[in-house]
Length: 282
Image (tube, rainbow, N blue to C red; front, side):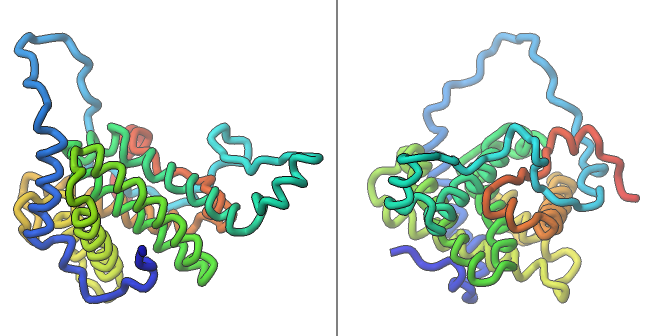
């Protein structure tokens, strides 16, 4: 039985950064990439990755993430007619719960689209491993769940559907990484990390939090390999940029209307576009 995510506000904010949990996620990463063949020694002409100007990114004014009405990326509710619609109504296809589950699936696809594609790793100089992908997945789940809580009980209920979809996907990802034995134990560990990270983000973004708290949480949960509490000099710029990105997405999600939120008709900020158009602090 899954816990309701909304009731998990307990003093577990350290779970996301504890060394034991860090080692646990590293174990999954090693299993995922142990069989990767060595890189070829021949030199080939390959396109150079885009130049990333982190210091100029994520300073723009927040805006709604809702898709335009005429966007080809919009997900539309199926509008069946006649006997087919009548039968589907009898089967509760158009019930509030069914619509919410379909909407939650679209929302989760938006999250996966942001964290499974190369730009987010290229922009923030991250290696794509199970650890980093899982950590980015949790960060974007937090962005959505935080916004949903602003809609009261209705949003919390929708968030539960989203969490259950997330949980099923994580189980598939762990299995794909080669973990088939003791799967339940591994899922419980990942659940602890999830709730620990959620609480840590919520705490670090409060008005009374210290200026560097949010960046430090980003570092511990996503970048750190040794459990250290503050960013090292090499990663500092990337960590600060991701903190700006996450804070801006929080504001953008708040500006995104309920209809777009529940239907999944929104897109996170395009990192490709942001890298090209970054103008730096105003």
